[in-house]
Image (cartoon, rainbow, N blue to C red; front, side, top):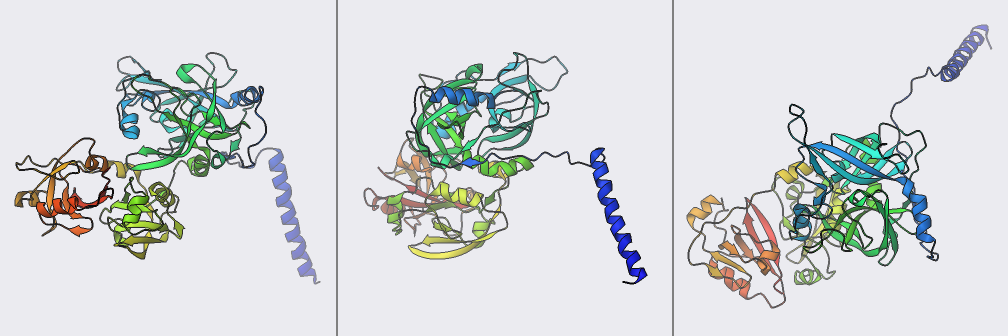
Length: 522
């Protein structure tokens, strides 16, 4: 090797060694820059089969081991219009949206506290809920409705003093699963204890479960029950549903966000809502928990502060069943029935129409409406996927490019329901609705497509088949059983010719777009 090459080699070697030595010295002296971000260590899921005897010590041991992982959450929010009682025993809104009824006002877990004049725009509302630690770095899971709108969040730990609490911040939240990830900004002197995750897909009716929470501000209360049902369809927002675990383990106001544990003491759900009635305003043995597998899949996105979901721009009919599928020539007896397709959306651009039944999404069979919604939301926006549909008993495949879901725009853009003008000579249909002819004034007011429309709905009897199917006054009937209609006589004849026990299919014009409705006359 030449002298010049030898000199160059040793120069490079010395430079590399110098950098390495410098990095070691810097690390020893804590001079190297470090990231302030803390990674979230998502608990692993234990999918081993649940087995073994349940004896007198089983639940006592679970409680002793897991109570330290459960926290009490206190919040303060200014001028909040919603109370936690909406979700846990007594609030009108939850039960009207989720169960179609309005129970009496019950005891909530929030109370207004007056603030001195000049300190903000309104009274401070105090709230209470539950959470559970999933990471020793101070990450805690709870319900979105517990911390939504909170200006301050304080967390109390098991074994702490009466007035001992720690500040926390919201990291990410998700309205569709009613879940939120918060993190302590003040840490206790002793290490935190974190939960373990079980497999919520493994749960079956009859499996033992335990709930731990802070009902009615009674800290770290333990209750035991069983899984009453799995995959219970549950409306989480207007027009959107999810699957929940149903349990009879006693949960009450204040249990919001607490863990539901299996017999190994692993979290299989997050307690989210209860059902109550007019006689009793608290637990009656019907509670709902968001499956932990659903939340676990969202944790990486919750950690970033934003949950991104897909949307294709359709609404689906919640009453589509095997009988309706067979009536439409679908032998599989499954699928998702498209009710509306807003113009300009991904589905409209792909050629999907109201009345289509979606059988496959991206090569996967669609069992029902909730399954389709979950598939779409789990798809990355911008992805183009094939969709198999049935239209007029013919199968075809369309390609749709998934868009990004905007919940606020979706909720804010929901059309208002118009009331049709009060006209004489209303015609009954036998489905609990009355119709009238379409006048030129009605055609102009409702901006009907030219030469379309057979009748306008002017009243709907509460509790009737039409009412239960979602028909409203002001709907203009365009088709009956997939056939265009142009008069009241054609509408009534087509409806009356619907075979007994079979559904009737309507295509109506509502707020500037077509909507497909299935009416079951039982």
